[in-house]
Length: 322
Image 1: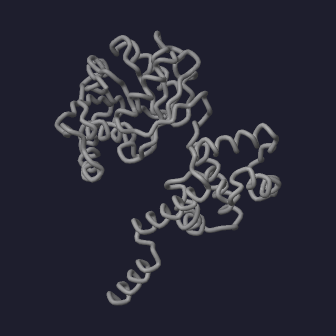
Image 2: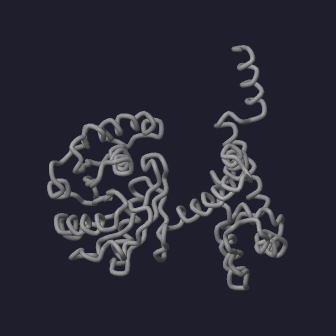
């Protein structure tokens, strides 16, 4: 809550997105990037993002004028209260840069990496104080997509992870604090599984690119916008919830629908999935969840102009224009 100044190191698409987000949340932001044209590109990116940020709602005091572009890394972090690193995904580069940031940033200030795949354990090896280094993995664009996944490495202090998670929450992000390091983190692992299966289907002539995209945007993607795959599957079990769904559909895990190997649905996994859905439901009945799902799908269809009457009106308009 006391943070007023953030440093963003690396001002490409991800780093620039972080800059826009922090500015919109009312912070003073100091940025640094070694590219000679970095400042001009960064300011164009912020200008392009600002109308969308305005529609989302700007915090009190939010202004693009609160952005400073520093000449050196050391200058950028000299008075920072939080540091967000967003350098290219090259392990040695990340290691060296995080060590430099650790040497230059004020003592005790948490330094987060936007890495999309490297575990912090592999990146913090040359830092003098690795305890303050965490992963703060965003989704592109960071100013628009709420999610950030937070996790430390083997030598990260627990309080640094806790502090970073709380800071991102205060800064308007939706935070998942991971209990352990997973290559690719959580959301990227799920995206990667879908992506690989899609590439298999295109390569084998089983589906076109358009069919794959439509299968998500016109199907499960409508539900995933507000209710994730686990709770969505629980509703497939009807009043019996996830337990009935697993009893009924569990054997199909071994069906050759996907090229990914399915885990064994033993009692431990079965119980963990059922208990997790019960916990997420937080007292809501299946009927409550069905009503929420139905209204959510209608809201998404309406917002994107895909209700049946909207589609019909759009078709009529096209005919008139033709």
